[in-house]
Length: 116
Image (cartoon, rainbow, N blue to C red; front, top):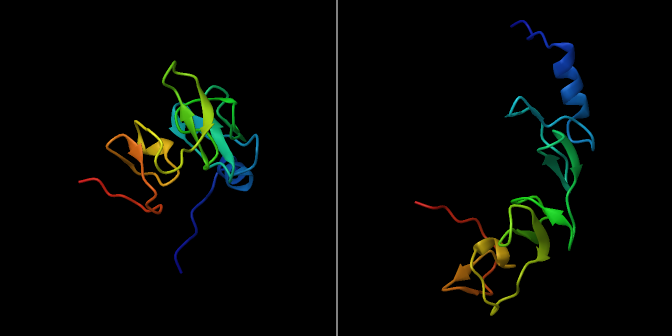
């Protein structure tokens, strides 16, 4: 049998607390834990917090999944609803389908895209 690795007390705390609101998620600029569903890492406080909802202030890609963070006016943006097919767009993240073709959201189903 291989010996089990020794875990430091701090590592045990991180594993136990991982995903909970208020759990540490960054330390010295490095990711130290993943936040749970409907949470994001607050890069000022370095803890897991509830994701911003519709109309709340946000930073790049911090809003709940069904929303997007509009930072077109400043670095601190506002969570907005994703746009349905036929609406004008400038980025895939704005569209409900995640497809912005020729500056218009399409009704294509959601799927993963791999860039080459």
